[in-house]
Length: 413
Image (spheres, rainbow, N blue to C red):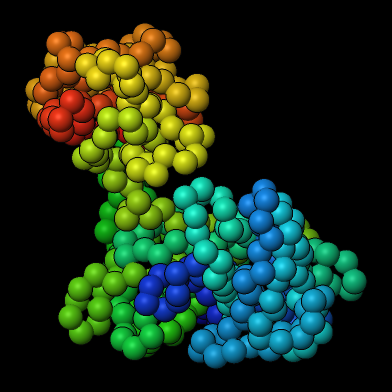
């Protein structure tokens, strides 16, 4: 079937903007992947975008937060909202306050993207001067809302994937948008399409590949069958990577996917968050300094140690006896001793092995003379978020009377 016979969503033909990364935006910017506003002249459908922006700080007012509207080409976009008309909406948010900004949908249908720019200073407490963002489209016809679509705030990525499906005869198609955030250079994205195997246990089959090249700050939104015209009935995945069009060095883009689905009352749309291969690394080498904590879920040792809520372990020591120290479970996490494991034996420990251990709140002794305070000692953590992590001491570092631990951490998430 000719793809021109498919009824595309009006807003899909407009810019689905994408989550951005430096160098496109300054530190503190969060990008809303898609904003649609206005009336579709073809059928009178009205699109509005609604933003809920929350001050996460429990004690400080935020006065340096601005909502910026941008067109597909990145230029300022003047939009009518419930808080005034303009390309910039300055916000003043009291502690824990949430403000709703709504586009009015009174002009001709147009789409672009938005930036929530936060120029407040950061502190050692993670939620100080920070904001949370929730966004959705409201689609109305004849004065009644017929659909709402959540819009995720995306992540910058250079390697990603999402599931795709196309049934041309049913108007069921997957679309996606991609943006090049670079201010001055073109970026290419190689898109590999993989078809699902005949059975769940079968390997996917490579179908085809295309490469898109986007100019600086360019944004593009397409349906799958527009990139692969031979598709009529297809289910599988799209896997992609992005790079500088000239040097081929890895460069970030941002993506958001959408599924158009037919229903008895008309077409419905759902946005989908890609899986980011960039964020799937589960192993890390960590230096745990005596007196400092470890968040095993994120494999982060918080050197400022201001906010204890995420911690799973605290490397405690006695102020009266420098030879005494322990690894203490924190915030509902629990520990299990594994024992001495060389790197090969440690790597072979599986999630099944970790789940079979007995976890307790009992601290692990790391005092001078303890058999635990040595290279190859391994233990497991059931984190305060319910994940399992295995940890091995790769080295013990002496600093005066202190003992710092070089750790190999692998978290199952």
